[in-house]
Length: 151
Image (cartoon, rainbow, N blue to C red; front, side):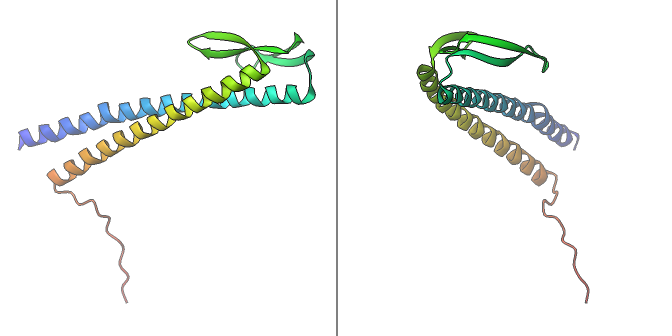
């Protein structure tokens, strides 16, 4: 019986330390990707507003220096902007180039989100499979008893 208990403990440890940690990391990565998509869409909206007003010089804006500490900034020429392209690099682009890049980048990021969602579903399925196996081994019923009415 002690060998049986140690095996059950090993499986529980595997679920708690490995599978749940893998799931947490996947969901965390997916949330970061969603954040990147939101930032690109916010940039797209800003570019479209600038194009709508046809403002190319004398743009006044607020810049976040970090920790929600903003300062006012003057942009003498807003016809070109720097766009984050990944790995710490920024590229100077025109508005049209930036909009095209944002479209392609968000499409790519959405594909990545779908893959992470599939990976998370697989890990959840593995967790459920191991837990169901443990319930069977320990002869624990998974069904909840429903309260019965007396007449």
